[in-house]
Structure formats: structure tokens, C-alpha cells
Length: 244
Image 1: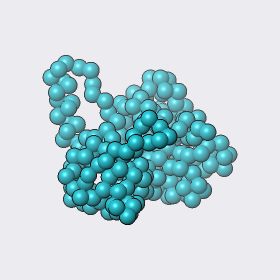
Image 2: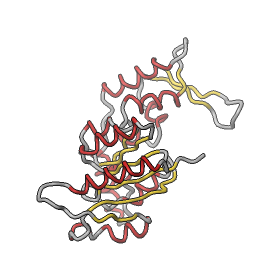
Image 3: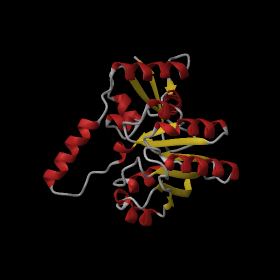
Image 4: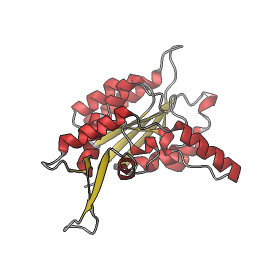
């Protein structure tokens, strides 16, 4: 049974440039049956969203700013989220924002048994990140632009600069997680390792470090060894990992 998701986007806090990639990413986790974006559409800086919304069937919600310095968009998005929660039409929520004001909302939705996926920029404060089941950085969803060869080269250089480094603390996190789910011989099924890493650190993603999957990332670290095993129930092999 497919997971139905409500995608709620804070138009004041998210750039419009990579919404297509964002929606493709969301589709990996379920069917986005509700897609709404919130903002004051009378403001010129939101004009660039128009074509993006049409192309991705995202419904814009108008919210005027009642008071200078106060964000009415946040309140409208939170009220809608609670209405959707009580309607019981979805299995999870995708909250797209870099604003820590949605921390309590994410916590409340999870308390109600709903899966919460957060998407935002790397500037997103930690409280909102850890309040989600999974948090994805928009920066890793950006595809290379189809420009000149020099343009592609610059894009690759920029992406390399934006990648996180595999620090000793990251290695310790992986090592401890392997130990947590390992059998008596120290071997751990990589799927279990990945699931526990996500629970421990919702923004953990191999793509943050330049790897499309967890397997090549772990393989690049000389502290671990990997073993492929035959799977009697499938043509795909099972990947196991352990600490050296």
C-alpha cells in the first residue's frame, strides 16, 4: 500500500530553482496527494514561483502579512497541517522550509504517528532537523546545469566545495551504529545500519558527502570491510559490513 504524503512548502523560506528535483525526491517516499505552498503572492519576489507551481501541480495558498516583522505564512501552514492531520487522509507529511518555527509542528505530527520528512537548506537550525524522521538538504538535490563545458566544470567545482567532509565523528557514528546491530561475528546488514543511522541523525545522507549510496561511502573509509552475500529470495545480493 502506497504512503500518501501532504507536501507543505514555506514559499518565504525556500528557493524556487530546484522544485522539480525536490518533487522527484519526495516521490521516493510516497505519493504526494496534497501539495500546497504558502506565501503572500502579492509580493514581487514570489513571482518566479508561478511557472514552477503550474509545472508541478502545487496549489498556492495566499496569506497576507498582517503585521510588519511577523510571519503569517508560518501560522497558515501550521493550521493547515493540523487540519490535514485530523482529516486522516495522509500517512505522512513533507515540511519544506529552513525555518525552525516548524520544529513543534514536526514533533506534534510525529506524536500523532505520522512520518515527517523535512526538506530545507543547509542553514536550517538543528532543532527542526532532529524533530523530523528524515531531513534532506536541498543542496544535494541540485542537478548540474546544461550549459557550456566551462559552466559544467564550475558547477562541479561548486558542488565539491559544498560537500561535507567525512570527519572522525562521522566515522565514529557509523562504527558505533554497526556495533549496535552487528551479530556475534561483528557483521551487520547494511540496510539495518542505514535505518539506525537515520534514526540517530535525521540529516544523515551519503549524498551530503558526494556518494549516491551508503555502500560506496562506507567502502571509501578504510575502517570498515564490506561483504556481499547471496540472497535466496532475490537476485540482488545482500550487503554486510563490519568494523576492522
